[in-house]
Structure formats: C-alpha cells, structure tokens
Image 1 (cartoon, helix red, strand yellow):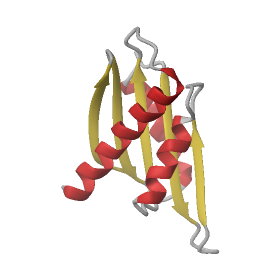
Image 2: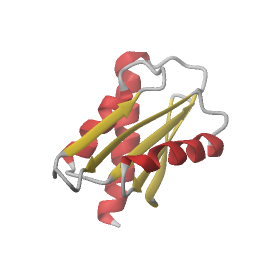
Image 3: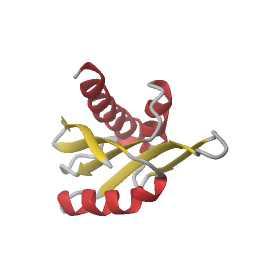
Image 4: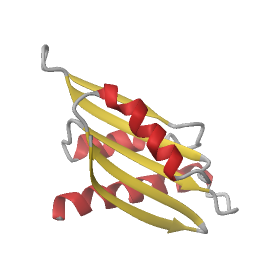
Length: 125
C-alpha cells in the first residue's frame, strides 16, 4: 500500500482528515485502517471506501464502512472513487468531532469535500 495524497478540512470546529491510498488487494484494508486509527486516536469515526479489481475475473470489488457515523459517509466516499474511476484505491476519512452537530446532510457533504480534496490533490499533483 502507498499513500498518494492527504488533506484536512475543518467544518464548524470538526476536523476531517482524508487520505487516499493505492492498494494491491482489499486484504491490505485491515492493516491500513489500524494504522489510520492509531494516527487519529481522538477521532470518533474512521470511514472508508475501497475499490479493487479481481485479477482472475476482472470484476470490480467494492466495499465501504460508515463506522457508526450518520449520513452514510462510507457510501459517499465510494461514490467519489467511482466518479474518478479509481481502482485499487482506498479513500479513508477520520472525523474529530468539534462539538457542533452537522446533521445528516452536513456530515455527508463534509466527508465528500474532504475526500474529493484528497483525490484532486493526487490527480492535480
């Protein structure tokens, strides 16, 4: 696995740390997320999405996880990977809660902005 880009977004005192990784297989996901959780110990939620291609069947495998956050941010991150046609990538975003509730839509928008920022940083790089 290799980190391709990272960024931070602040929304109403909450901080969203986004990282884009290139992975060989979805098997790398558990160790990657363990490292992500260790790096952001104060974060309440560590959401992610992954897209890989099975080499034997050439089918695309997708997975996402909301980690208990409202607004389905894992699904939002997966939609970003699809939109930018990124395969063999993991997009992970950790949220450190700032004390102000963002609501379902606000959370989804914040995760989208943070994730898209990391992707654009990588593509424009």
